[in-house]
Amino acid sequence: MHYGKLLALTALCVGLCACAHTSTDVAASAPVNWTAERGKKVLLVDPDVELSELTFGDVAEPRADWTQAGKGFVKADVASMLQAKGIATTSADNITDPHEVQLVKLHAAVGQSIQQNSVLQLPTKKNNFDWTLGPGVAALRDHYQADYALFVYVRDSYSSGSRMALAVLTMSPTGAMQTGFASLVDLRTGRVVWFNRLISSTGNLREEKQAAASVKNLLDGLPL
Amino acid sequence: MIARPLLALSCAVWLLAASAARAAEHNVLPPGYSPDMSSDEAGLWMLMDKEEAQTKTSPNVVKDEKLNAYVSGVICKLAGEYCPSIRVYIIDTPDWNASAAPNGMVLVHTGLLLQVNNEAQLAFVLGHEITHYVHRHSVEKMRKTVNTAGFMKVFDLAMAGVGAGVGADPRGAMSLGNMIGIYSITAFSRDEERDADDGGFKRATALGYSPNEASAIWETMVAENKADPGFSRSAFFSSHPGEEERAATNAKLAAEIAPTRADWITNEDAFHAATAPFIRRWIDEELASGQPDRSITIFRRLAANMPSQGIYQYGLGEAYRKRNKANDAAAAENAYRGALACPDAPPEAWRGLGLLAMKADRSAEAKEAFTQYRAKLPDATDKAMIDFYLTEL
Image (cartoon, rainbow over all chains, first blue to last red; front, top):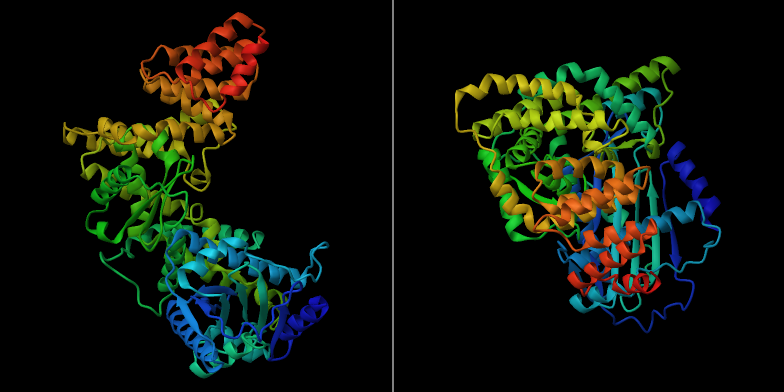
């Protein structure tokens, strides 16, 4: 369903317009009764954020200072958005337990697969949104006494001065791109119950206000 | 994604190799240094810190305190004033390899510990890696890559007219993170490798490690490559200067420095004492790598160096038996018998003999060997299979 739409929008964002696009998926089988889940606690997993500078020669060079600032904004914005909704949260920063580290890596792998499947669908998977991290997530539930975990993954790049100058000179888009996803995982079953993708050719996670706008897009439609 | 960085990287090496050694000399890491947060170097460290966080919890990291203390001790002496900035992880994998990341994370593969002859050889390899770290070759490599990509862009624009290639799809942009992941070991230029060899030699000989051991490493490689032209030890060697060149360079350096003192050390005993508890495991992992040609080359040397250690002859026997080419059965039998003549003979050498005899229809011999195996290792995990063979023979 999203296949053509997302591809077209991706192409459009890359090629022409300055736009932000999000698309949401909700678990297909046994949908969650969100009204009943309202009092539940959500674990905010340390967001995986990486900001890079897109050099003149199209190399994405990671920037530690931008990443530090951007990650700080994303973290604070996610926490305050959930707080504003009246959702009880707890956070997991600097995870060091080997099993929990594996779960974070597993989520990254599953999240990438969901992303990929939205563009190039596996023939047998189709649109059936039944992704899961498996029952191993019980470790997170027990450790943090939480019912759901919210994972956030964002990559953003910004053109270097020389690259920007060339783009202005030739009146072409800079090609820098913000991509990310957020997912809500039921810690009782491991199921990814809600997933949202973000792709945007604008936005700036290095700035507090713009970062808040990006996070708002990323959590758009969070059913809690 | 792979083809493009590879092309760019090989270009980087060819275009800029000449300046590498000189650049390295001027770019020595100050001890206790951490890069400015807004620098490209800090971005590189950030990626490596992430890698390290994952390495820390990897099930492949060897946790044994004694072995870690020993290997870290050797590295600490070599690193000198950089010791407090270095963290060592021993990775359980049968490759002849070690690496030093720009943030001070040093990885030592167990295959290296299995295959070097003594502490001196280990020191020359680790000194080489520490020099990559101290001379900041990684950040040099990154800057060269970025610059080269820039040159290529200018070239593209010149070829296609202004406007083409600008605003390129960022999915086509090269992510340094990916490139570093793939090329961290192989991407240094040959000049940087020579610089690292030179630095490692100086660090190790300053500690009294016998300079002849440096050339011995490479002479071993040359001999083993000649014995087996298809032999590929690991990715470590694919970008490194030829072993023959390194052996010659090191031999020349050794000849110069050797007469300056009489008390050069190899610390062979300390090395074997530290690694002995793990040798059997590492041998099994080498055998499990599924490269019997490589395993035969390695075990032939180790068995010849340490003829009283039956464990290496056992490994040689297993490798021959698994390869199973013409005359390998005889070679395997010979190796198993050599192993069984040693006090540390592993009971599995009997099993090997039994399997060979069974295959050659020498039933009585097979029965005798399997019976010995069962008696010497009553709780063997494959005892049910062996007992079945015994009833069939």
